[in-house]
Image 1 (tube, rainbow, N blue to C red):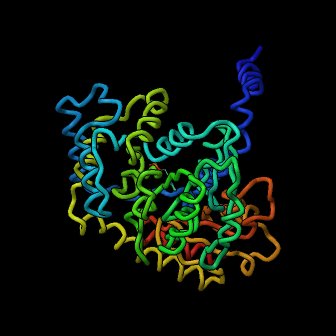
Image 2 (spheres, helix red, strand yellow; image 1 turned 30 degrees about the vertical axis):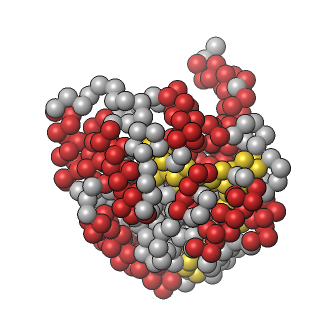
Length: 397
Ligand SMILES: Cc1ncc(COP(=O)(O)O)c(C=O)c1O
């Protein structure tokens, strides 16, 4: 029997693999492969094409040279746990005990998965805003939990408060909030956060907040849900160093919140990865100690790139939803590609123009094929000449 057959049989027989199959979308891989095969400019996956500060690279290199090469503590090196606690205090006035209220993870991805696995029983419901970052539905599938989706509507990506209220039922366990939000670039405002908080307290729900773009905000102010009244004791705040420092490959993240919840997440993390690479933890700890101006520098650079891409796409006829934060802009392609779905457009784009983008339909419920049908996500975390080149290529559509 061929190895491939054995693998297929094993996957078919595995309930978890079956549950995950709808979420193992190949679109990102397909688009990146298409980008390589066609020599396209890749505005698909969200990673910068320049590295972060040399100073942090040197910390990681020095850490390797000086012996930070064996298992660090499972909860994370003390330097990073203290740096995360100090960061939350400096930026948001949140006081945390670095020993019991901060846990280091392998990126925000592991942090979110471990939170959902730790907090949800099979059948529990998780309220989240759609479009959703792609790992969330998969986290629910792994935990046997059920996503309850609340739609964000362009142009401002607002939600209907009644829809949010009716998404909460007797099995709701937690609200999984991503702000600043991928793919829309929305920063949830104080009124919206207050509505979410009111629902959490009224129904005794927990909250998990993914804040990986906290330092990439251009318009408005990022406010962690945990800072709202009565939310600290029921919220796990997730973030990571990848976006803040432009080292997305380092995969150093963290969870912070009340000690009993962090302990539950730590119990799961212990058997997912046990610990995270020590040299990168030390480098991210050094970065979190940067002065606020230095931490804000990437956002100041990105805003010009956002404007360049958004104005260029608008000039080409796209309806542009200018993001308030993150790496991504969304456009509606109805006027530039009448009759085409975003997926058809994005599949044709590399061959016709030499550009790769992501159809936003992948961030919507696969059971609702009309959702996000004409929306496309474009990453602008690239060098300006790359964006200029992409826009010139797109002009030939
Ligand atoms: C909303 C959101 N959460 C989490 C992640 C992943 O973060 P990390 O690389 O730290 O796992 C991303 C990366 O694109 C993201 O957009």
